[in-house]
Length: 269
Figure 1 (tube, rainbow, N blue to C red):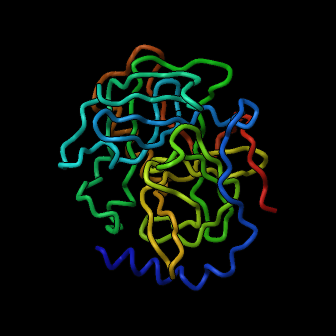
Figure 2 (figure 1 turned 180 degrees about the horizontal axis):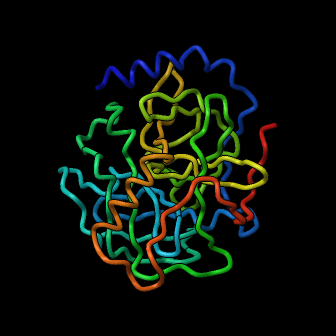
C-alpha cells in the first residue's frame, strides 16, 4: 500500500510548478482576525500532545482518526481529550471535555502515514460533554469533495505555533486518487485533523481533513481525506454506537448545505 501513495505523489509532481498565487500562513492574533474561525480549536490529548479539530455540530467535532490512538497503538480514553475552540494566547472561546470518540469503522491504525487506505479513512468524530451554543461559534457544514486545481484554505495549530491558530487562505489541490486528496497546504506536526475549507458562492465549508505530510520533489505537501462518502459512513457508525445524547437528535450532515459562519476566506478567482 505504500506504493499507492508514492504513485499519487509521482503523478502530482509535474503539477507543482503550475500552481501559483498561493498565500503563506498568517497567525490569527486578534478577535477580528479570528472572526468566523472560532469553531476550529486545539484538541489537547493528555500525555501525548495535540491535534486540530473543528465543530460540525453543537456537540460534535471532526478530526483525524489517528489522533485517537496512543503511541503504543492503543485507543486513548475519551477523558484524556479536551477541545479548546478558538484557542488564542491561552484563552479559548469555549472549552469542552469529550465523552465519546469514534474513528471511521474502516480505519486501520498501523502508524504508517504512507498507507493510502489509512489516509483515505483517517477521520473521527468526538462527542463533547456539553454542546457549544454561542453566537460566535457556529458549526461548519460539509462541502463536496474538491477537484484537482481547486483552491482551498486551511486553519490549523502546529508545532511551534500551538498557542494560536494559523490561516493559509489559498493553497491548491494537486490531485485526488484512491480517496486521498493531495494539497500544497503548509501543515506541521499538530496539524493533523485540521479542516480544509472551500469557498463556493460566498460560503465556507469543510472539504477535507488533514491526515499526513509528504514530500513531492522536495516540496512538502499535505494529504487529506475525501469527506463525501467516508463522513456519512462514519456518522452512521457513530449513531449506531449508542443512543442520541441530550441536546437534540443525531443528524446526518448533508453535502452542500448553506453555511453562514461569516468566516473570512478570500476567493482565488
